[in-house]
Amino acid sequence: NTDADFLSLGALLVFDPEKEQFTNNPSANAWLTREYRAPYICPTADKV
Image (cartoon, rainbow, N blue to C red; front, side, top):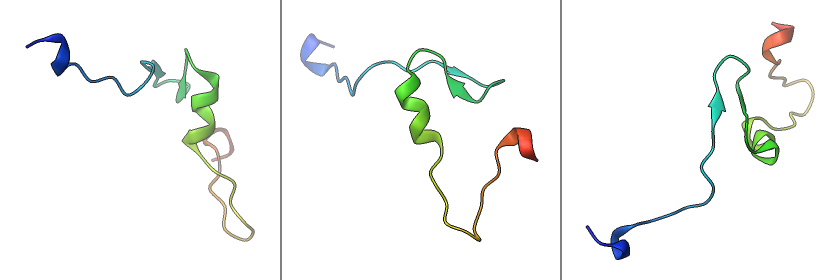
């Protein structure tokens, strides 16, 4: 392998499975869910 074989797609994300969030990139957490229109909902883990 050479340096030409290396591929980077962005920053390395560190995920905390207990909190179900990224620990080193708060803006990445916005991609974990989305806004749902009523009456369709996807409750967060703390509301289940």
